[in-house]
Length: 193
Image (cartoon, rainbow, N blue to C red; front, side, top):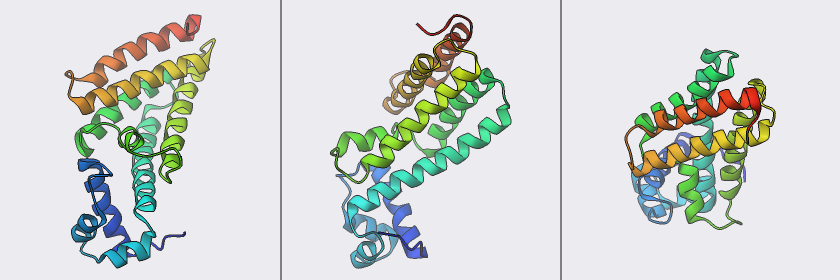
């Protein structure tokens, strides 16, 4: 289904994005989304076809916003992989402050959906992209095993995002960044182990 991005479709997506992130996918019904968007349920279904499609669009739009914000930060950081690494963690901390600290929308959604759900694809795509981002930084740093180091860096990042959502400790992004910088420096010289 191709979505025609009318003002009403945008209103539905905006309302769904806010409600899904704040309350969870299963806790939010289409009645609440339609009411928040100021449209009828018929309009919601006419634009998106199903709640599942709306969930997939929500995750895809959130990922696009994150990538846009991160791409700008990476461009400012330049070509140095250490600066790029700092840019990723700093952007994630800023994002969490601005967008809410309920953790990663992809992880939250993944906990609620089945493997065959329409939203599985944007979730998997976002995590694959994140992995490649960190593998690229490790490659640029001259790591002997950029795949392994990139995955370690990703795990630190993902852990910081989840920890921020749980409010389990102060400044998880700074703590994870410190560990990531140590790994990047060591991996660039000796390779990730």
